Amino acid sequence: MAQVLEFKLPDLGEGLTEAEIVRWLVEVGDVVAVDQPVVEVETAKAMVEVPCPYGGVVTARFGAEGAELPVGAPLLTVAVGETADGRPAGDGSGAGTVHTADTDGASGRKPAAEGSGNVLVGYGTSQAPARRRRVRPAAPAVNGRPRAPEPVRETRPAGTPQAAPGARTGRTAPADGPVPVISPLVRRLARENGLDLRKLTGSGPEGLILRADVEHALRAAGTEDRTGTTAVTAPAATTATPAATGAPARFTAGAASVTRVPLKGIRGAVADKLSRSRTEIPDATCWVDADATELMRTRAAMNAAGGPKISVLALLARICTAALARFPELNASVDTEAREIVRYADVHLGFAAQTERGLVVPVVRDAHTRDAESLTAEFARLTEAARAGTLTPAELTGGTFTLNNYGVFGVDGSTPIINHPEAAMLGVGRIVPKPWVHEGELAVRQVVQLSLTFDHRVCDGGTAGGFLRYVADCVEQPAVLLRTL
Image (cartoon, rainbow, N blue to C red; front, top):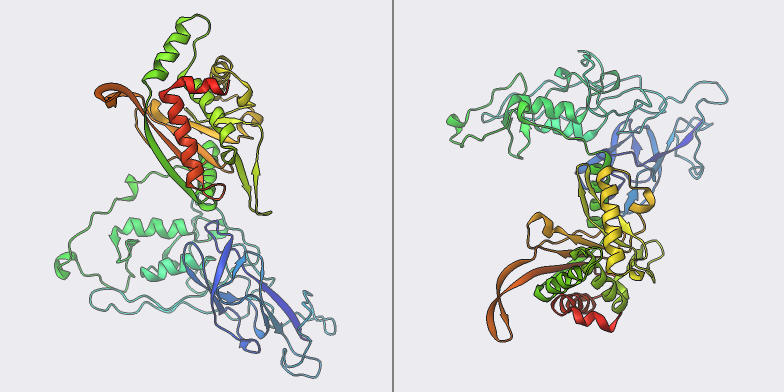
């Protein structure tokens, strides 16, 4: 009895969640074999031919060439088995229903071409095929370089999970049988560098060979191929030395000189957020130098008057809130699903704080309602909590605009990365004495560089430039703030 099975876009590994269909390798009505490549897709990492785990007749394809599909979306349907009158599956019209039954209701037997048991990372079918392809021996070397072996297809039990690189299990692939590899990227890396996967010991579950295992073997060999990837040669081939080929020798670091630091905890969270910002937000940056001499004099006068000391960061924050009142377009975020710009009436001001555990961005709630003294106290409280690691989730989320004072690190300028999902960030460099034309004469003044990175979806350069110019005017002439107090 014929069954129509649905083949979904499998997990392509490396944390990728979608792929673009580059070229279909089969048409509707074509007969495909188990593990036959049916579509070529492109991810952010590589071009991959995706094999189908079922053997039968293609009854439908989903997605045109050039379309992007998420992992788990249907790719195609395949009719397997035979129809009731003995014709091959797919010969008639019943391709519209997808069946997932494990056995043939009439005979109790499992379909003959149910699946290969493996396709890509995280994808499996319920039964391995009876016949398995064997690895072809390495081809002889050509012009002193090993010829890459023919593509190898391997199988594994369904549901075998992929594990992160860890302690090695001590299991190697048997001399006669499938090679425990799931990812086509791993197979391709080994194939292009002439590496025999049967010689490797997998560090994954049940001896599964991971990409880290292949890279470890390539680094241990200490040679490089033309793509820049560390490579080894197949045992049956010989590699010409640099002296023989006339090519300059390259330096490659040994495995002992490589240190791997896990991206987890705060470092991992920061990496994810910054990557998302760069991926989703079309940012632009503008900057200006400003004479901060009068601002520093104003702060000195305020502190000389008695009471709690006022910080430079608090004065800059007060300037920011006044600027956002004039340019509310920058106190916003973008709702990508609704395709709407969301503007906020309240300013919840985030500020970058460097701690021993990494970079965090505490948020000063309702910063637009606070004066310089209140802002100074709140900055001090949140900074101390950040260094002690006692910040609550509420104190780390909900920001609408971020102020980044990287001048404390002794640098003049930067191009800040927007704190997703906010729409802008003001960066402030160090305040240092520099030659400056003041009132028509050359003088030494306290100069600071201000830079604004903004989401170009929420405003154009005119708005961003107006915001930054107002901030610079307030820095140069603090009395400008009196109009908004």
